[in-house]
Amino acid sequence: MTFAKKSLGQNFLISPRIVSAIVGAGDLKAGETVLEVGPGKGTLTKALLEAGVNVKAIEKDNRLIPILSETFKKEIENKKLELVHGDVMEMDVDSLGFQTSYKVIANIPYYITGVLIRNLLSAKIKPELCVLMVQKEVADRIISRDGKESILSLSIKAYAKPSIIMNVSRGNFFPIPNVDSAVIKLSNIKNPFTDTREEERFFEIIKAGFAQKRKKLISNLEKVLSKEKLKEIFEKLGLEENIRAEDVSLEIWLKILIS
Figure 1: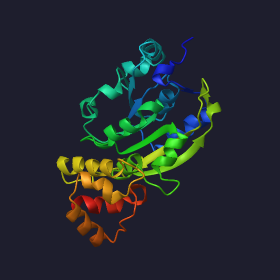
Figure 2 (figure 1 turned 180 degrees about the horizontal axis):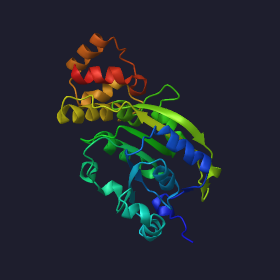
Figure 3 (figure 1 turned 90 degrees about the vertical axis):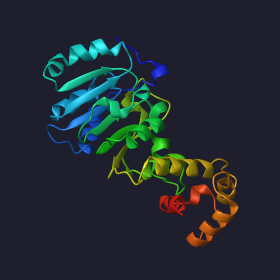
């Protein structure tokens, strides 16, 4: 028996109903390519292959590679499944060999959620769609359920439309985690920036804006923009000088970027 490694954030999904819902949310068509991160023991992998798609699965845990290789021996031989042993966080998404559109469907280790999504969405060859199991609290932050934005929510909304497909209680995993989860879908993925410099500047601005949450946005932004420029921008956009970063929509952040 292979036990989950706490250090890798492993919690294996054991509910067929949830697996089916995740695959269904991917709107999959036979012959499409799907990237799966952290296939674990292959529960979701099996369902994806049964949907008729080609899967590239990246697994970090060397104990699971022989299990997956044996379980899906036929699919690997038929080139329906490509099993990659490695850490996705140490890989350049653009080096994974995707030449055309692909989808990402995965039950990911929660500690890599933010960085992984950013890497996927900022890649040159972006996924067409992502369906990901994440921590429920993080899912709520991504869609701004409380009406407040964050660096995470803005970083995702800049590229895609996030939505929650379903909430998933902790009892659907083994071992049982300490938190509940949710399946999120990122659709309408695009690149809103004209070039890499503009993209980098956007993240520089929002990180400065959220640097000290209790401070007013205009004060935080003085690190990256002059007081005179900020006064001009705030007047132009009709922003109150006491507004905080969490109360500013993506649309306004993008206008600040190009002002």
